[in-house]
Length: 100
Image (tube, rainbow, N blue to C red; front, side):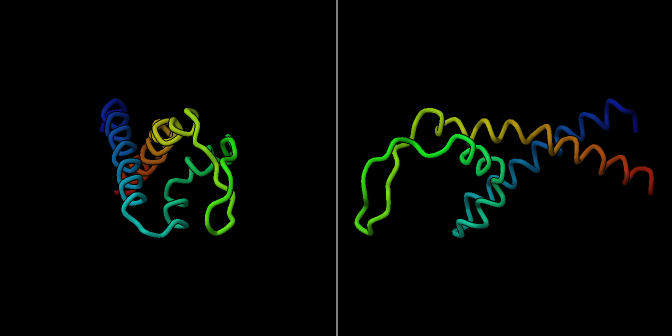
C-alpha cells in the first residue's frame, strides 16, 4: 500500500473513530462514561472553567450560565481529535501491514 493511500485511509479512520466515540458518548446515560469518551471536551471544559454563577438550584447546588466559548467546546474538541485519531490509525495500519 502506498503512503498516500495509507494517509487517506488513516484520515478516514480518524474521522470514523471520532464520530463513533462521540455518538456513543451521547447515547450513553452514564455521565462518567460520556466524560471518558469525550475526554477532549472534558479537558477543554476544565481549562475554560464554569461560566458566570446564576444562583442555587432546588438542591442547593451552584448553577452556572453557559457562554459562547462553552458552545464551541464540542465542535472544537471534535475537530482537534480527528488528527490525533488519524495519527493513531496511521501507525496501527502501518503495523498491521508490516505484520501480515
